[in-house]
Image (cartoon, rainbow, N blue to C red):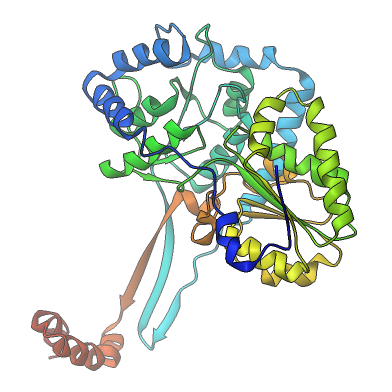
Length: 424
């Protein structure tokens, strides 16, 4: 880990850089995978499952029997936890449904906007060292609430050709039944083009490794849109003298264990808290099953001492973290200063894990600095917004002259005539 005490502002831009991401290096591999899937469809997916997942599969789609059997393979305790998370996430995202409001901009001119669900969406769920069944909740729930006509799910099989039962149970709970045993860039290619078994979609959601991220980026060349650009997971924690170092260390490690390319940043205004947090990190990491990932992540991470919370927030806005934790007293007075962050956790007891699983907010968030110009996934991610207008005869009479003058000034006579012919 790297420790900095009151670094000069001119060095901040260097400190906000993420670990190098190898998207360009794997671009050729992505192109080859897309070409193969487009040409050979299901057969290519079966071969890639053997090559990349060491899985021999005869049937790409998960059967109804496999889905129904999944509930028997996980504990009642886990099922109950998933159900509670499902309720909270549904409650929060349902609150994002808005009523249509019609506005009379000029007398006789009525304008409004209506939502229409994206008809076909694809969800990618990682299934390797960390099968993210929680992400099924985060993506399927708003998709269902938005009214998407078709939601499909792709996730890699294990070496026995099976999908993690928690993923299947959660998908069934969320009303997703079209599930396919395909992972990596080939899954993104399949959702882009469609195969004999997997339908093509209009928008692709979900996290993944660098191959999945690069594939989602490449899919946009074929008219597919994606939830957001992404990179490895990250958290930035700001702590004052009232922060609990043990809590801070746990939050930092909860992100560091995602993968060796994850990054964590710790900023404190108190030297004692900084040093104690570093000590707690060193102690807690020894107890983690995934400590190898976490340790590699810490090699890319920074522990910084700054003079004030205001200064720490200025640094944070420059970094634009996926997750921001304010472990400070009177956090309310700092909320308005937060400009760039995916999701924010306030106070000593608002652990980032709450947002990852069950508080209700979405954990699919912009990383790699994209919080400067992207939002996390929400109900809006699954809809398009169409504007409508209705002009009465009186409305066009009231607005017509304005339109005619503007159209003529732009040299677009046909535009002007479309008004003039109605006013005669």
